[in-house]
Image 1 (cartoon, rainbow, N blue to C red):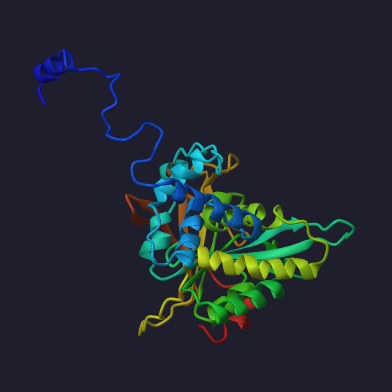
Image 2: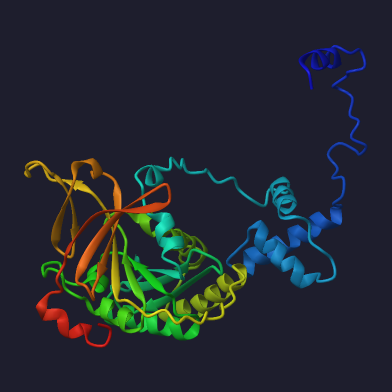
Length: 362
């Protein structure tokens, strides 16, 4: 519309902004009746008392169970009605500045270009029962890409044995991923002193033709999916109930996992047939640090207790290092415009003491 038309229209004598010409009574919904509001209130009350999830999406799922012949209101409408009925609370949104993207975090490479399913796994921080000195430990698994899934299991301790045992159980019950993304704890990456060693967790995953990916040390955002699900686990499970015994925890945890699977509509995907030969690799996401004691090139990353020098221009940026165990070489790439670019490639020999763990996949 032209500027002249806008001026002529706003100055017209017929414009009265105090007149309500919507065609229905103010304060009354145009389509959805009081019966709809009553159903939503009833469903929310049921979910609050007996279920882990109480949001608008959970209300829609329960509506379809109770009234299969009637289509529920759109999700946005349910959210609006719940807000009007004071059934929901406004959560403050975090200020997301996109720092990881600005610093070239290789998100697109990991979740798209590598190909295949990426499973994130992590131990949950220690929990305690009243009157019990020993901590209660959990491990969580999460798929970030559809079909999404969150799954938790109580474990005896945060050890390599427990990690491997729960991974086996997860692979048998759900699916075996192409990649497992974990943090850099002793249970997964191994020794804090020995250089270029193959940990038992690496060995287990590689024997099953699964490629390990190690997140950035000390940067929880690099495990965003599982860390976010850990928050859901704390809010919807641990903080919601008062547990007295381990048996109560296990019983409620089974229920929580079932509800999570239903809430996310997880369906086990068919395993695609692939004739592609498995190449044993290990990936490391690292942030380039600065060593002021070095001369000239002061940038470096640390992988398996080895410092690898990089040009100063990459300091504070994120890189993805690929360790090819067959060639025993490591290639370091940086993601720019969603395209990985090689910036360094050097020999990276497997520690002689851990070579016996490579039998079977090299």
